[in-house]
Length: 227
Length: 407
Image 1 (cartoon, one colour):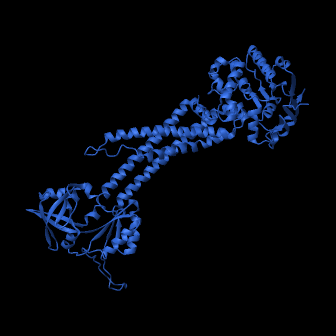
Image 2 (cartoon, chains in turn purple, cyan; image 1 turned 180 degrees about the horizontal axis):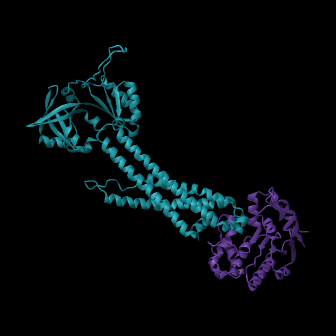
Image 3 (cartoon, rainbow over the protein chains, first blue to last red; image 1 turned 90 degrees about the vertical axis):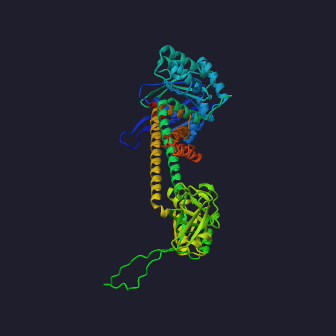
């Protein structure tokens, strides 16, 4: 069997540890996602979806359990190692598109490469232009985020997430604040690039219509995962 | 081919450009601070050196004289004894063993010139006029290294020898004499000599122009009845503010009265020191204010840019990279502000130098800015900018990416 891109085993996450308001948000999560798999993570607000995504995205550390990204046990990595892993292996697409307002669409799409190499390279620029063309924004590459529509911004965010060819794409309600038509477009685009590039996707969504179109759905309720 | 900036510099520049108003305001603050610092430093430096030059231009840095004659009490210090102690009149006396004293002084490090001088009161007479003067018996070559007489000479040469004398322009006017004329000098001891004026000087001090009559050392000695002796030995040192430190050991070694200009002009020195202290105080406060300004603007910027910082962190930017982004912003504000400030300070100097002039039309101070002041101010501003950015930069680096993105 091929190695899963993500392997979660017994993940627990508590906040305010050691205080009176200590609260466990995740009560032991097990989840494997294989390369090229497109998985929807659904569940009510406050069930712990975003927390799980942050843990998988290495923005936070789990209280207990094991997170493996591409076979690497993240517990063995220090802050620098995690940061590097985030940069090379993971692409984020956030709900509110989260582009850097001071940079053009092209520069935003190039940013993971600039961070990785310390400065922009011609290869990054070529890759970013190709990705912007792929998401239909080649004519808008010089525009700043505030000159783009919500859907366009999210396309830039997708291009940015894909730049370094990460093994894993994490998307936190990527279509959350888009109208239905645009949401469908963006979702379709993500599905397409997932097929083209074979990266695993974990997508948090509230939209059952979108969840149905994924390879698989997992449901989170009160800090537990049901498949 | 486009220039690709390093990530940290690129982001720092964009952040500064994005917060345009804040950046311009703080840049203005740094500019003003640097301009004021450069302008004040140069102005006060110039004023001080011109004051010092004026004072020390006509006097030696250190003077060695014979010790004062004091009374020694013969009466026992028993209770009930009354004594009236009348200070002794100080007669003109030679420096004991002046040649070995001069040799010792010349061998002292940082002493660049040694000149024996015999000086005493006399009358200068010509026709009906009689003026009280100070006879100055000097070795011209040694003396012109103490007081730059050649610079002050308006006519003739500074070469008193035989019965040739060099006098000030005021005395010449008072006596109605000019170059080549003869004057008679008479000392209290009754000796007299007819001197030929072979040089006129204007030392920039009316009193000295009226009083000093330079003759050769030998003539001075015989007129003042100090055969072979001198009344003082003048010294010039490399660093004028070291004069006192050089004088003290000499006094201890010789047992003579060794005074530096710093003792004889104590009030001037205190004034200069106070001036320097207030200058430093102003500079420190300006630096502090600039530092606080940069720090506060960047602290606000970190708060405003929390989300962007979070995004960058999520994309894999390390803590060190973000630390650098904000440190660079501080350094940029400091260095660009100091470049602007140096230009502004230079402009201010040009205006001041053209508006405020001496009586003779020359500028009170040189409008040329010494490079060390400019480089110093720019370096300090850049370093202070970087240090001031330390607190905000550390905050940026320590932001939790999850909190930052959620904000």
